[in-house]
Image 1 (tube, rainbow, N blue to C red):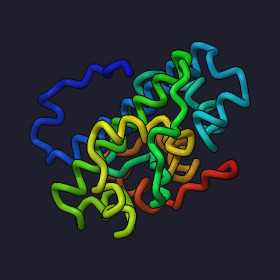
Image 2: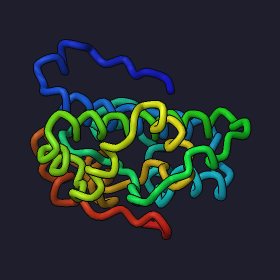
Image 3: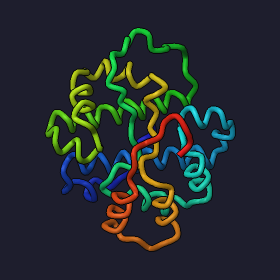
Image 4: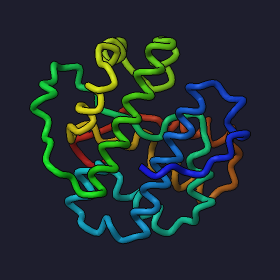
Length: 200
């Protein structure tokens, strides 16, 4: 996953969880923005598998400027989430075949997101549940894994990052002049449970 260029001074004063959320938002949106502009997502079937329910957002990002994408990402609420199934995974059964570049980036993105949530859970489980909208069962399930196991878990297709704020949030960020505080508030009230099996 390509690192985005973020001035350290802009994030240094924030708590770890807050920095983690902002960087996740920024990396996820900038990655989708680059792919949308490159034409790499023209295969609809590939898009739905790696970016479930995000076709509208990808189409919007394709016509956005980099500045608009950066502003979109700049809020304290996670814009993407993971489906934590809380079931026993046979990690050795996860497909290990060679992935193409886009798939490999998706696996890495999922791994970093899982790691961020695990770090938050182990630091303060109640705060982690609030920030990442985790149930107690999900937080406890995640806490059982070590980083090497998360790396294998991230290759499961169901672990792709899914959009967890309403489409209206992304449109508002492009069409209105919103402050960081307004974006955070709007993303909070626009937050919803991800729908992974169908388009959102």
